[in-house]
Structures are given as C-alpha cells and as structure tokens.
Amino acid sequence: MDEPELLLDSNIRLWVVLPIVFITFLVGVIRHYVSILLQSDKKLTLEQVSDSQVLIRSRILRENGKYIPKQSFLMRKFYFNNQEDGFLKNTKRKVVPPSPMTDPSMLTDMMKGNVTNVLPMILIGGWINWTFSGFVTTKVPFPLTLRFKPMLQQGIELLSLDASWVSSASWYFLNVFGLRSMYSLILGQDNGADQSRIMQEQMSGAAIAMPADTNKAFKAEWEALELTDHQWALEGVEEELMSRELDLDGMFSKELPTGIF
Amino acid sequence: MLYESMSFLYYLNPEKYKLRKWREDNHRNSEQIVDVGEELINEHASKLGDDIWIIYEQVMIAALDCSRDDLAWTCLQELKKQFPGSQRVKRLAGMRLEALEKYEDASKQYDSILQDDPTNTAARKRKISILKAQGKSAEAIRELNEYLEQFVGDQEAWHELSELYINEHDYGKAAFCLEELMMTNPHNHLYCEQYAEVKYTQGGLENLELSRKYFAQALKLNNGNMRALFGLYMSASHIAASPKVNATVKKANVKYAAWATNQINRAYQLAGRGTKENKCSVKAVEEMLESMQITMS
Image 1 (cartoon, each protein chain N blue to C red):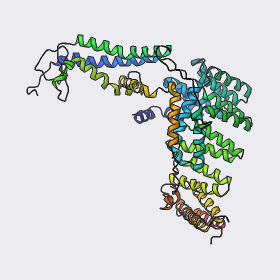
Image 2 (tube, rainbow over the protein chains, first blue to last red):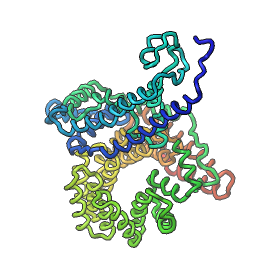
Image 3 (cartoon, rainbow over the protein chains, first blue to last red):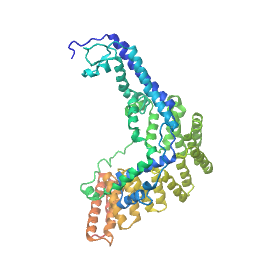
Image 4 (cartoon, helix red, strand yellow):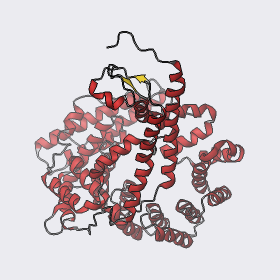
C-alpha cells in the first residue's frame, strides 16, 4: 500500500482520461451504425417457424398442463408422443448442419461479426497503448496482486509500483465494458455496440442454434413430455376460494375511473 | 427509464403520448384516434419526426374503422411514398380495399404478399377475416385451422377460432381452443371464465362440474369477476338439483351455491351504499336468487 499516494499530473486527466472515454464512446456508436448497415436479413423458412412454435407449445403443455382438465392434457400428450403417429416421434426434418464452410451466408455473418467487433477493439487498443504509453493513467479502487502488473501496466517499467496503478490500455478496456449502459441509454436496447452482450451470445450460441438440431430438439421434447404427469391445479379450488370472503374492495367506487386523460 | 422518457414526452406533446399509449395497449377507440391523429398530422407534422410513419399507420386503421376514406387514403399515400414496396404498406392497402368491400382485389393483394414471403402471418390472417366478413364461416374455420397447423403459437388466432366455433355451436372444439389459451395464459381469469361458460353450455354432469371448477378458478384469480360468481352459483345449483348425484355431492354443491349467494348479496350491498336506487336492485337480486333456488333438502 502506497502511503504517499502518487499525485498525477492533471494534464493526464485532461488529455488522456477524457479523450479515451470519448474515443471509446464514439467508436461504439460508429460500430452500432455500421452493424445496422451490414445487417443481413435472416430469412426463415415456414417450416422452421412452424417447428419452433410446435416446440414452444409442447413446452407450455409440460409446464402449464396442470391448468387444463386431465382428459385434455392426455389428449394432447397422445398427439405428441404416440408410438405410431405422434408428432414429436415421427416428424423427421432434413437436417443440414450449417457449418461455416458450406453455408456461405453463415460465413459472411461470422466475418461481419468479427470485423465490426473484434477488429476495432484490437486496433484501437493497440493504438491507445502506443500513443498513451509511458505513464500511469489511473488507479483502480481495489488492491491487486503483483501478477496483474505485466497485464495492466504495459509500458511502465517500475518494479515497485503498486499493481493498482494502471496504464491507459487498461483504462480503455474498462471503458469498453463500462459504457455499455450509456449505449443502452442513448441507442436503445439491442444496440450493436454492446460488445459483452455479443460475446455472451457467442458463448451461448451453441445452446440457441435451433435450426440445425430440430430432430434432436424433438427427441428431447418427446422424452420430457413422456415424463410429465398431470397434477390438476384445480383439485381443491372451491375450498381454497371459499375459505375466505371475496375481496370486493375498490370494485364499486363512486367515481368511475376516467383513465389518464 | 422508459417511464421517465414517456412522462417527459407527455408535457412536450400530449397527443403523441396518447397515441403511443393507445398503440401499446392495443385500444380500438377509433374515433378518438382519428380526432387526435388528424389534428396531429395536419398541424404538427414537422414536430413529429420519424414517429409520423407509425402514427400514419395507426390513424389509417382507425380511419378505416370510422369510414373516413379520405383520411385513410391520404395516410396510405404518404406511407407508399416513403416505403415503396413494403409489405406492411401493402397489407394496409389490402385493408383499405377490404373496407371498401372489394374483397377480390384485397385477396389478390394479400396473395402477392404471400408469394414474396410465405411466413407473413398478417396477410394470411387478413384473408381469413375476408372470409369471415363475407359470412363464409365454414370456410373461415377451415382456413383458420390450416393456419393454426402452421402457426400453433398464435394466441389471437386461437381466440378467433374459439369465437367462430361458438357461433357454430360446436362447443367441444371451442373448448379445445380455449384450453390452448388457458395454458399459455394461466393467470388470465377471462379465459377461465369463458371456458367455464362453454362447458356450462355443453351441459351434462361432468361438464357442469368442470364449469363450476373453472368459475371458481376465475374467481380465485380475480375476486371481482361478477360473471364468474353468478356462473358459480348457477352451476352449483344445477348440479345440486340434478337427480343423478349422490347426497354428499349434493350437499357440497348446496354449500357452494349458498356461499355464492352470500357473496352476490355482499357485492350488491357494497355497490351502492346508501343510494335509493340501490335498495331496489338489492331487493331484485334477492328475489332473483330465491326464484332460482332449487329445492334443497
């Protein structure tokens, strides 16, 4: 812990900290508009739309089947899972796994994703590191171990300097993630400048990629539905209802609600 | 954050805020929309910026409802100029043709949309509404069934189908549609109540029991649903009066009916405390309930 805190030149604040914030922000906005321009229309086939809705319906049947009478639940379960002609059992879709090599549109999508997101980050990170090197920019408010020094203090060759003092490159990366909420404020939700969201999507993309695995999805749904039983939620509804008086407060006020206007 | 921006807008431009609220809540108060929207378009077009396009769409649909062809035409022209070749605008053009009862032309318009984009649900639904407007309910039902085979998740369509079946007195199938809606919206008391009414209409002891249960569920979800309360009373009384039930069931249903009666009376007492008119209506309710009393042992 530094007893005498380092006093940084206030010029650093003026000419380093603030410009990096502006640069990051503007680059993010530009990225958002570029991604809008480069967006390719994803055309879904009728079959894909239909299948995804069927899967949703089957899931709803599993989750909320307890609200409909037993007979109706069994009727639907039979429709889906029947040995001979159940929908989930017997519908086989032609599956074309969209690998990047064979599917040209996937390839361009991936390239666009890389160009708009990863490339600028690397370029600008490197440029900032080169321009604003040789001095300490800011201090992170929590203590860090020495292992972080080479990562966060690029270009500053001081062995005794506390690892909490970081260089401008790390300030840049802090900004990239920190300005996310600013982006949603200004560009609205779902903006193309939201890097961490994109990275999250890439990681969970495997889970969401439905089109290729329709057959597997059907099989999984079939199994899950087989296991579901019908516990009618309305068994004791009258007793529950009549255990107390109805709450009629506020139903009959003298003034009719006039709405907002 | 959304609310702050919305209330900010209210002070800047109350009409725009009103239109947006109606749009988001799906209100169909067409006359009001036409009044507010027409004024907005004619006087304040410059202040609206890009919002004007969605306002044009909203006002156009309202104008069609109110038979304001002139206004609908102007809105359509503006939208066509701005978005040539857009399917959304084509659908609006089709709707205008429907309003003018030129059903053949409207149908052709929707077919052209579907050629370009077979997944376009709006055009398919408009075609079905043309059939409904022409009174061809059997065909409308058939088309709607085919539509639902492809798009099982469309709740609006399920509800429409249930209505069509009720009109055809095919209560079994209407019940099926309502079950779909109940599953996707388990907390909506109105679907429970509608389902119970259909079951009650179907009749038969089993259906009456089901209807009583679903009326009770609707009441549980919303204590203020008077229709469900009356339904509960009616179904319980009918079961109690039926000769086929055994004594325990009869006793239970009599208890339910009595409870429902109490609640109805309470509600009517609360409804108009102290007003003279109310005293008459309370008495009327009591008499009605007594006349509906089936002899209970």
